[in-house]
Image: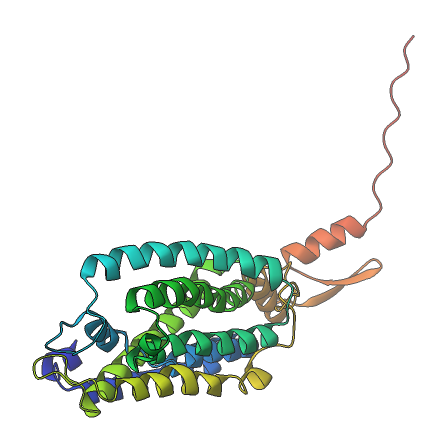
Length: 308
C-alpha cells in the first residue's frame, strides 16, 4: 500500500519492490518448508516469473484504432472480449481432455520441457500478427487470431498449466491441504503479478506509448524475448528442482501418515520415558500404550453356563 501511495507512477520502484519481496519470500520457503516442497515451489514461481506479461500493451495494440496503429487489427471489444473468450474456453476444455488422454502418465520433467516449447510456439502467433506476416500469407487478422491465438493458444496454455496443478496437488501433505495448496497457488499468482509489473516497466522503458502519439515499434521484439526466449531458461532448472517421477508416482514419503500425526509422534518421542513391558519396548504415550495392551495375551473366555 505504501509503494502504491508514494510511487504510484514509478514503475521502476514498483518492480524493485516486487523483486525484493520475491527473493525474500523464496528464501523463507527454503528455510521453513520441506526441501522437496520448497524446490518445486521455487520452480513454479520462476516459471511464472520468466514469462514476462505484456498483455496490457498487447490489448491496446489489438484494439487501437487506425489513427493509433495504422494498418493494425482494430478489433472491436465484442469480438476481442466475448467471441474470442468463448472460443478460448472451448479450446481450454479440449486441452484438458487432450492432456488426460496423452500426457497423464508422463514424467514431470518431460512435461515441463514439452509444454514450455509448446508455449513458445503459441507465443509466436503474436509475433506473426504484430509483424503483419499473416497478411502477407493472405490470412485476415480476425481469422488468424481466432484460430491460432484464441483456439490453439488457449489449448496450449491449458495443457501447460496442468503439470503445475498436478504437481501442486501431489505436494500437499495430509492434514495441511488447504494451507499448503493456498501457499503454492499464492506463490504462482505472485510470480504472475511480478511478471506483469516487469512487463509494465519494460514497456515504458522501451518507448511504447498507448496514447496519441502511439508507438508500438518495439512491441514485437519485447514479445519475442519475453514470451519465447526467457521461458526457455526454466528448462535446465528441472534437473535440480523437479523430481524425476511420473505423474502417477508418490512424491511425499509416508503418505498414509498425516502431518498432524507426525508432529504429535515427534513430540511424544522427545518427552516420553522408555519402559519395558512384556515382549516389547514402548513409550508411555497413547499409541504406545495401545500397542502394549494389544501385545498382552487376551483373557480366556468364561465358560457358558450349562442348562439343566
